[in-house]
Image (cartoon, rainbow, N blue to C red):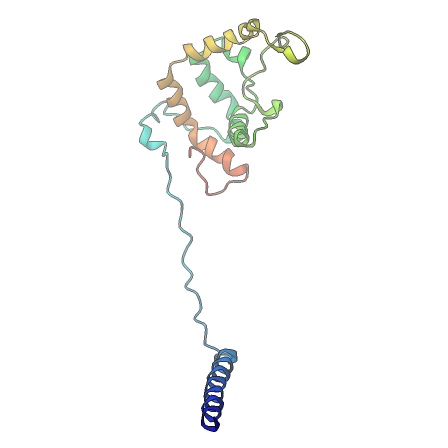
Length: 187
């Protein structure tokens, strides 16, 4: 039995030594390494997903565009050719480029302040039917929107796109002034 105890003691010393050595080596902190300075590269410009030039619609007037602050009259004149007398009836024309850009910017937020909308509010009161929990929009309410729908259906798309493409640099300028430098409004 004496020999068995000796072997057990020897085994315990070897296992204890191995565990001690393992724990000692794990607790050692490695020598500090000289950190390499990170390579600084220029930030990559995001690719323009929907370039205006690719539409082929930028032709139009050979006149230079006015400054953004003076653009209302020029854009109104261009839009009047499409909308005729309906233009002032349906649209808020003062600061129209700002209104369009601010509206597009606010769309994902789920809240559109009425004072920035480029389209005038539909006249008349909301028409409902029923009471309490059965309160619903009346089918007659849709008639309030028919003039707007008619105008939207009557405007030819290609000339409207051409106007947008011609005035796009002003939309881009307004978008950057709204707080998006380096971003592309058409995307």
